[in-house]
Length: 169
Ligand code: NI
Image 1: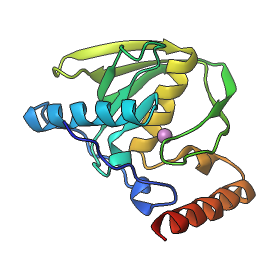
Image 2 (image 1 turned 90 degrees about the horizontal axis):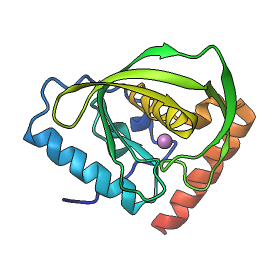
Image 3 (image 1 turned 120 degrees about the vertical axis):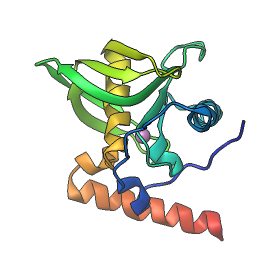
Image 4 (image 1 turned 180 degrees about the vertical axis):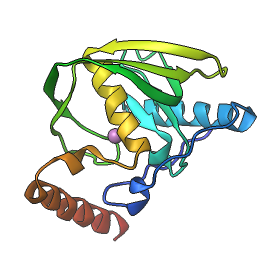
């Protein structure tokens, strides 16, 4: 297993749209293991392949307290969304230190393959629902701060670029 490096906003590679995965083979299983290790190491609750510069439709999630309930979604598709939406405070491993409100569906149903290539239907509400919607956005090349006002987004962009410059110095 290996720790992968996480792209940081406003890296344009975060805006790339991911391709469907044709086969859940050894390469994908290695990527899943590496992404889980990377997510746990970074203390995140979700990570999309896009964030580690692999532009394939794969997400790993763990919203459990004990950090022992990994969920793997391959080629996820929303099959149902609730009528109700809610503003939730979100953060992202690609935008460290930034938290802001995004409107999401209260509940969703998602069809996806699991780590063994088996089809699964996930019914999610609460934090898991928010997390799935956030990660699926990454696969479409969208970062949560892109929902915020242009003013806020530009402020975050400036702050991130400054932090990244200082990290390199
Ligand atoms: Ni994120």
